[in-house]
Amino acid sequence: MGVKLREVPGKGWYVFINWKNQRKAKAFGKNKTLAKDFASKIEARLKLGDAGLLTHSGITLEAYAETWLEHIRHTRKPSTAEDYKKRLDQDIFPILRTVDLRSITRERVKAVALAGFKKNQAPKTVQNTIRVLSSLLSHAKEDGLIAENTALRPGRILPKISKRREIDPLTREELAL
Image 1 (cartoon, rainbow, N blue to C red):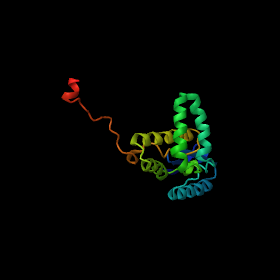
Image 2 (image 1 turned 90 degrees about the vertical axis):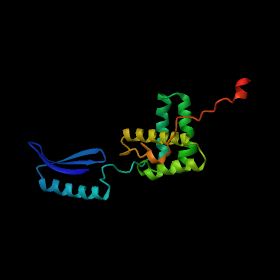
Image 3 (image 1 turned 180 degrees about the vertical axis):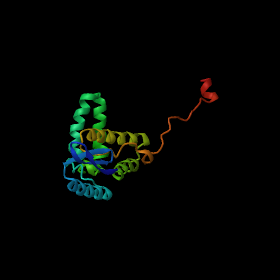
Image 4 (image 1 turned 30 degrees about the vertical axis):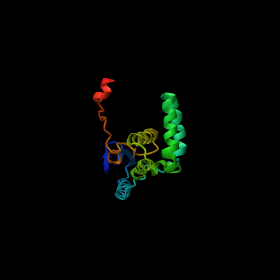
């Protein structure tokens, strides 16, 4: 995170901004005082947590999901697209339907996971739901609508899922049959 003021030889003064893996540069020509003022204002906004580099997308999760599902229908198997649609309708939309894409925070992702656990869903089912949300948000990030995918690497949100299953060997009677 940072704001840097630099003079580029032959071009003038530039303000370079690096915030949440997003970089921007703004040229000010020969006007150093204007560049300094701009840099100090941006630095103050960064300290408050908003650089103003991206405005609200103005797109709800439900509206963007239609675009995303259309992409999925063309790139995945039909059964996968149906499963994603089912996860959206049953688990994600009840909580995040009208939420702006930029307003989906880590806490809201946790709320989706917690709602799944309250419905007595298996940990693997909840994990798959979070993965669907993460895929949707990754697509939105690629489209430039959000700065980061808040559902990526859920970590402590989900319990560890063991791939080992308990062995249930045959008894002597079952073996004799």
